[in-house]
Length: 477
Ligand SMILES: *Cc1c(COP(=O)(O)O)cnc(C)c1O
Image (cartoon, rainbow, N blue to C red; front, side, top):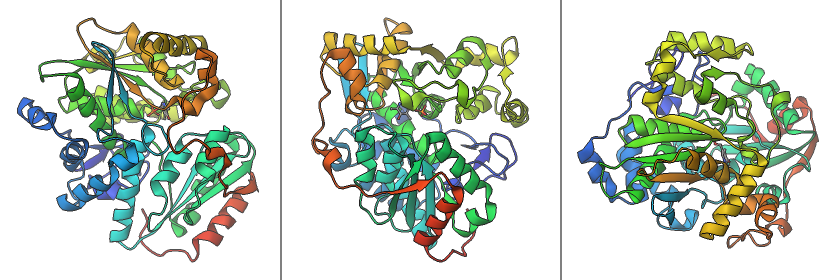
């Protein structure tokens, strides 16, 4: 399997060559040249597999330059009952016949991002170890990605994590999740400023190409292809759990931000999984809902992006969306390049009244949006009717899902976080605090390890130099 760029400017590369990278050199995103196709016989073979076996069957198609025994071992130590609290890894909860929640949030940080990032941590360690290389991961978080990335990379050989967060602006729970890690390869840097200041520092460091090369600075952002590949697995797992035969179709409702999660659903559908609809849910930041209703893609500015009670979906620009549009155009890289030229210059594009828009139905994507009041009402309704407490992001998915539900097609709503992370909204909806999973009871009282710094890229660079030791001479990633 070889990988190409959505903008056509990258010579085809093996999986291991794109694993550690971010954007393709031409500014596009990497994708396999063709998707593996699973026929009915193959689906039948996969149907009764446990999560690690299923993950191996799917991921070995994407990562075919990693020896099978090595990949099996990496997957085996990632998807354990110990890390994900149960053997199913992603258990299906049935609310009523034909309506399900797929539990994706039982990993160490209680959010679905763990499913991909836990694998990424082991894949990165393996790849770096093989070449005797090191990587310094620099990231910024306003709450969700930071803990997932740190729990994925803690204790990994050859990897250090430098995670910037706005000092005193995350919830006490999220702060405790990150700052209570005492692993020597994890560095929490609390910046005196807001999240945008943290992102500006990342941009400044990334623009210093020489520094980036010298100190092997990398990221774990959501455009990484291995993250998407890892997420396709639970679409298969959920499908098999909700159906008895491969002649049945299901629909998925997906709380969306950067279009990473639902992109994995799209890939699973392209691989032959019988998905009727992929129902994309947004919150008040409805840039993607606007596109799927009208054909008009208009990324917003940071100033236009509002803070909501489903904060992990507060995005102004959906970084993985380009992968979907590449497939929509029939993999026309020149067309994608033309469309994103406008986007990269701060503009928009409109596919309405073009032949491309007529094809959109073939891809099964539909959308819906929620307000804060919708979210609260949905949490209350699911609690009253089914006795289950869901988090605000999952609630956005359930709301859009029910709007697009077909009577004869099972609906699987993806649970993207546990309610304990967003207790204020839960109290507002049902009048009491959500349950805390075992091990998280007193997390806020644990000793914390972090440094506080001014919003100054130079100071952050100096800190990295001090911690990372002498620069590396290995080849660039
Ligand atoms: C990241 C995140 C999302 C959005 O997922 P994308 O892959 O960016 O679309 C939704 N809900 C939660 C809780 C998240 O952490």
